[in-house]
View (tube, rainbow, N blue to C red):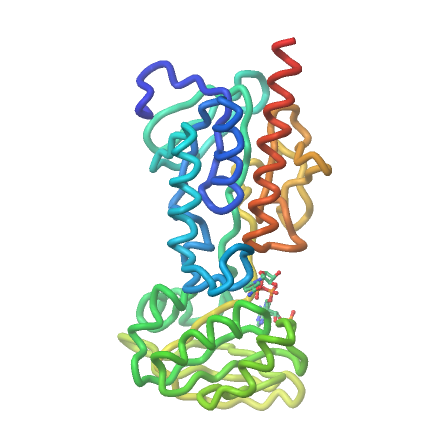
Length: 313
Ligand code: NAP
């Protein structure tokens, strides 16, 4: 049971506490709807795991990801949002109020704003799961420090791969980016920075087919995507940044979604169920930025406010 005791009936329930969720909470709170935010497993969402965010407006020197999350939270709470360290695990959207079962209890909600975000993809190769936490990682900010003066590889060719790779150069003796194609998907500014960095190396047209090690990572098996040639590459760490999958399994069959699992929304953040709104990476396969997610969260809360106003006549 959440801290509201038996009467866990809320006007606005926000699922998730990343930039979308906490911005939705801020707007719903300022509309005096006393929103409750269920944080999910990571307060602040994926952004909180980013060391520095350089492209959120208003912070010309950049801002720490965790710090930005705390500021979002503080601002939402200042206007009356309640942030609960709890996770939703089952929803009934077939009637209103909607019912949401959580780790700690149950909520009845007049509206729901889904901002459950996304989780990092796995390579799904031998050794990856067994050696996760023993050299395999999906979070440079969390684990980079453990690789002081060590050799690491980064898998991927997008913004995350290069940005996180650059971050790990603070600690590691060398950072080798392994990308399956010739061209990077990452933005030109990050490509330039990465290519100019003395500690960064690149192996292109190559896939990682196995993570090798007993107690910890010792090497990876590489395969040249063009020639098929296989090699063993010694490394202490394997950081994997190959995209994300939206955390929307809970809504399968309940909300319309794309084949990839992104919740379908219209330009008012409305889902296929009236009274349920979605924002941020759970519903956005295109932009996935802190600023765009925050904007979507604000829009979802404005629309939820209008929805409740229309209902109360
Ligand atoms: P992404 O842009 O989807 O890039 C994923 C990368 O992983 C691609 O290079 C892809 O290769 C590779 N990949 C995918 N599956 C693979 C597999 N099974 N094996 C090997 N390689 C694989 O993901 P992201 O870098 O996490 O970025 C996600 C979003 O967040 C993007 O919109 C990005 O712009 C944004 N972002 C922005 C910033 C910033 O603005 N500073 C920082 C981080 C993220 P291919 O290129 O061959 O498909």
